[in-house]
Amino acid sequence: MLTALTSGGKQVVLTRQSSLTSLREWRKNETYYCPQCKEQVLLKVGDIVIPHFAHLKQTTCRDSFSEGESPTHLLGKIQLYELFSQLHLQTKMEPYLPAIRQRPDLLVTWQNEQIPIEFQCSTIPIARILERNAGYHTVNMLPIWIVLTPPKIQDSSAFVLAYQLTQFQQHFIRHIHSSTKEKLSVFLTYNPSKQQFHYLSHFIHLRGTAFAMCHSVMRIKHQTIPFAIPATPSRKDIEDLTRQYQSARRKYLRSVIGYNQRGIHHRFLRACYEMRMQPIQLPAWIGVPTFGQAAFTESDCEWQLLLIAAIRQTRCTPFQLNRSTLHSFVKTFEGDSSLQLEACQNYVDFLREQRIDIYRMDKFMRRDFVLEILSGRFLAMHARN
Ligand SMILES: [Zn+2]
Image (tube, rainbow, N blue to C red; front, side, top):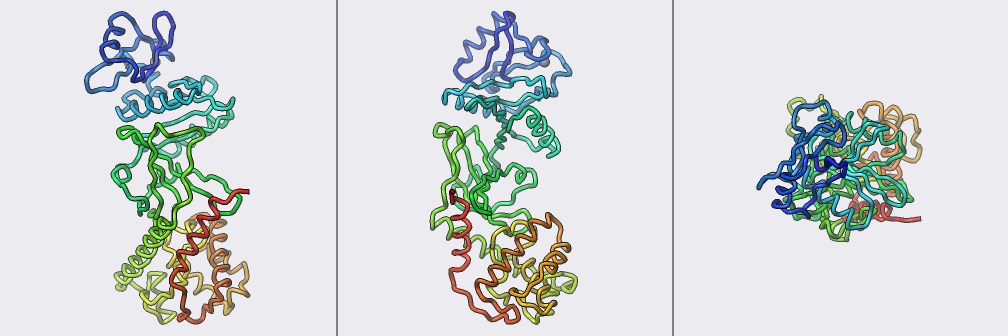
């Protein structure tokens, strides 16, 4: 922890302003106490460790104070504390909120609102995060979670990349509402060793937990309140995202051929077989990043081909389609079926707009149509009322 009380009851916060020598002086002349349990704590000052306070002996207070915090966590907390202080916002370090018995890393007052800031460095059960959020909710606080930048992202200088987001990381993606159905989604991470924020945004689902996304960096000294939002991707970024998407699509189609041994048990291959088509010949209008496609964990090629197969079974065209066909279709997938219904509807709308005859596999698509779809999605994300 980075705060303690002096014997006189004054609160001390350890920031980088105090030199190691002065901290060693403090330590000689002062006794420090835990603000919560009032037991004595030690001021630890070393050449390598980040100066911090630690309980003298084991106490039950340790849980809420998460002792054994990593140096990265301590350092990030100090830097964020300094950021908010420099923005002239009232900022409390590790304040205890008795009503909910929680201790956020920081509590920032912005426009008369108190905002807990949590800098999350380790992976903890999502249930614990929900619990903490529920606690904040009961006192009408909306916390901001900042996650430690994953190593792969830290080292990347690419503006567009493909990356697998764990369930834990996906949980911290914030959806910023815009006026349209497409929301701007942002995963805010911070890297204390380089003192910069790494933003991941504009996610295009590829398959499983893999996404293509934009990556942008902001030095902490340029950060503002409210936190900056990533800009609309440039034409080049969208071209790169399109390339990532198309390359993942090709990879998927090549990989399913490997399943040939048990092909008939693979839903995608069975559908290909029934349509008398090789996976690699899949028409360009199947496997398309239409609105809401992330509702399925399967590749777009897979759920869209299966949807085409389901519609063909009813002998309808996308124009005559009955909504109940979609309802029974999404039941065969895991995930949120209302989101999946929306994704199916958006794909069917695309088929209608493009006047695609789903009973013929030879319809030619313009070369840039995926680029146009993605441009449309990003324009919608950044549209304002
Ligand atoms: Zn204590």
